[in-house]
Image (tube, rainbow, N blue to C red; front, side, top):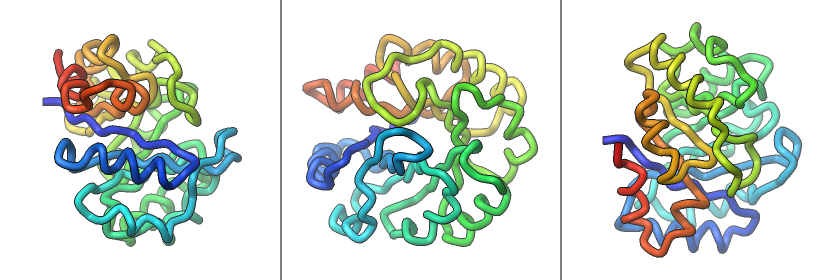
Length: 209
């Protein structure tokens, strides 16, 4: 069954904590979005010292929507982070950034913006754990899924049958079946999941093929 990670993108830590508590007992993994206001226009919460307040019951894929992500990794290597995902177009040295994450003993994810060709990551697929294909221009929740991402998923899946392919941005029950059919095996959803009365049922609605 396809994996679903709820996405948390907030400017205020109290909201992050509130959403994290909503997920307890429902999922064990979630995505925590961090943006710097440079790589994407909006700036989110960035106080890494508060992360320990969320405990270890919920583990996070830290999605760094930041310029020069290699400079952020050291301070975001807490125990409740299991993977660090950065954008291919945000770093000048992709292999160096991958190695820094591995040295921090975290899984490695690489995100591709809509305009970034899929074949950009072909040479590094054996070095990473996840390719995260963006379904929207990153930086804000609630945007409509861009169908161009479907072709990118298909292309990547045809090239590699084993790589984990995640899709983030505009993911809802309306488009999830098309995304899964194209070859994705991980869905990231924020606005849709937290906008529903029952998060558990909303997750199941995304997993229907």
